[in-house]
Image 1 (spheres, rainbow, N blue to C red):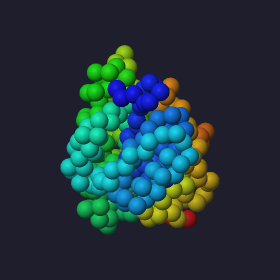
Image 2: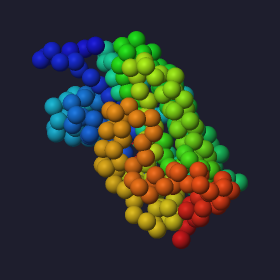
Image 3: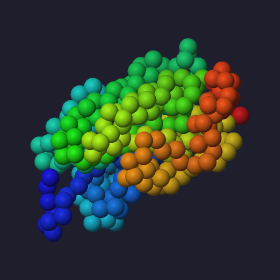
Amino acid sequence: MLSTTNGAPQRTALITGGSGGIGLELAKVIARNGFDVALVARKRDTLEAAAGQLEGKFQIKAHVFAADLRRQDAPQAIFDFLRNENIPIEILVNNAGFGLGGEFSETDLDRELEMIQVNIAALTQLTKLFLPAMIKRKSGKILNVASTAAFQPGPLMSVYYASKAYVLSFSEALAEELRDSGVTVTALCPGPTKTDFASTAHVGQSRLFTLFGVADAASVAEFGFQAMMQGRRVAIPGARNKLVAASHRFFPRGLVTKVARMAQESR
Ligand SMILES: NC(=O)c1ccc[n+]([C@@H]2O[C@H](COP(=O)([O-])OP(=O)(O)OC[C@H]3O[C@@H](n4cnc5c(N)ncnc54)[C@H](OP(=O)(O)O)[C@@H]3O)[C@@H](O)[C@H]2O)c1
């Protein structure tokens, strides 16, 4: 592991989608807690602005790497960049992701395949690449950003909900494989949160985003960071979201699916 000038270990967190929304707030709380950060997103100017903001506010180094996780070669390029720069990763935050609303029979397949690439494949590949060094060091943390969407099927946003079910299932299984290894895996499952997500997914008018309040990204990130540091396997911020996540235990899956559909419909 690298050392800082005062001899303390230089610890770096890689955060995908770290230039905005929940990812940027995670980068802030991680930086505030003394970690260097490496931010990944597509737009270099937004990345550099975020890095400047973090370096200005906290005594840390913020690296940036512009990459489009819709591309299959992006995870390897990120890994190679950090290895060439000799930046070991202590915390991997797989946060980048997006959704798409609409009836599956009418939505754009290319966009959905890109979603599967970003939400599922890139997250899996990045974990595969960065995990071996963590296991070797017997130290590391992985925070995968899932969603309350992970807990039930989501009519009118079917591929997105299914992608987050993958993230939750994969994270919990991996956490169990890694028990006693010194490496922890946490699935953060936010409910509706104030970011660009809803407009990107065309679900801003859904009951989910309009009927009840939406959380602010900073409090979701703070909650996720604490859960990750404690090594918790599943982290659901907010009482209402905890209820949503537990509903499948008390009600038939068909009913839960109907309620999810109502939540996805516009008011
Ligand atoms: N907001 C919610 O209501 C909510 C609820 C539950 C879960 N989540 C999950 O939280 C995570 C973060 O979402 P958010 O709400 O913060 O969304 P956001 O505000 O849209 O931020 C997305 C971030 O990911 C980056 N990004 C998007 N596509 C990318 C790509 N192809 N390659 C690399 N970077 C990419 C964006 O930067 P560029 O555009 O520059 O690439 C940005 O930094 C997602 O996994 C989402 O599914 C969100």
